[in-house]
Image (cartoon, rainbow, N blue to C red; front, side, top):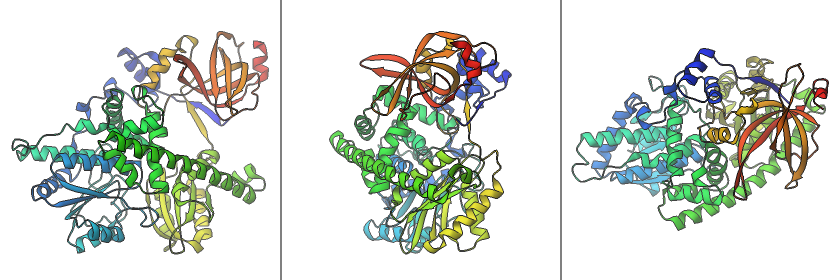
Length: 591
């Protein structure tokens, strides 16, 4: 098991939170995540950062209001992931409610690649003939694409959240909390959050123009927070306080049955109960099914699922998305097996050799371009190294997708490589944890060397040591179904991790279920210190997924409290995430 550390917190912060009425365990968890005041946990919409703090947003809203009044044709150009699909759906649904003539276009990643490219601009002009292009979840790096649109007489409104390059595109207006000069406090907002904020500003602009007094029905924008929540969680952005409000409000709407037909249909094919939905379901059940369209086919299918109000059509789309996700999992499994074999052939003494490298770059001619990001994430998790996986692109190029570890800003690293090795990278973009790039096929080895060079320069041995942070041990009185239910109702995610705990256990019984999982009975040993551990008189149910070999009698484990529903009965279960054999010199006393 990797090194386990317990999250620390300021006792004064803990005292302030617990004195506000929070249960002590929850106060400790929140204090360890940087929450200092109870107000930071409020999730009412009134606590959202005001939209006018986003640079250029009122100017862009005015441009949109003018375009709607002039009956101009608007075209949303979306990205092909969950964030882009939900952002497109939010923009399309609300703009149509506000009387706009609006359509959408999403690039096929295999034909056009990412963003507002000149080729996409030409396609948009030829088949849609828009007056105004609105990018969602892309565009901040589309210098050439915006120039092409300007040349054809189209206005471009860029809404994005990715980090900008050295030059900004010459768009009519840009909103992006990460662009220079923007003081919007939530730099972590997703693309769907940015377009939602633009719709807030547009509604305010139309109010000022008395558009609603003239007969236009004013929309309740809270109705679209189910989509905002899904895109925010699925894009794995940091869940700061503003994002937590957006997600919590969206979850509440879904739990009350007030979500769009597409989300209802996705929940149905994923066999999830809307009333019990959590951030886990958004990120690991709905998000992958939506993403599968962009990875293997065309994200238009995902967008159609999210913009329809026809339950039957939504169900039809969701069924197709579910099947694409099954295909994606099969492709991913084959690719992962191939990648591990490739690593073993490169590294004869695998672990010893991997310890001497600071990065991993892999390429195979048979790998699927739409799945390399997932594979990069899997290899990164296994080896705790920044990873870039390449697949064949067009015109003797390779498309790469990278995932990084804490302490290594991936986009900045690619920027360093681009400057130190001019011409090596054709194009790149992304952020700290994930990025994409294109290189010439014959430059693969050169890129691997350059990337390893920056990784060795920027990463320390401590950075390359995987550390599991937990929320410490739990006292027996705190371990109950009520705490598990309370934790499952909170908003957890990137930068605000779901609570895990660590403890020492006697494995009282174990059996294999479903041919590949271990069902356990665990008794907690009351102490992990060198003093005599006492065995709890309570036996807890436990599950260890995708592991079927026998466990030793005593284990140290990192686990989550889980609400297990089976045959109509709800019970507490420990979900083991990591384990190691306990120190027998200590645990022999417990027999």
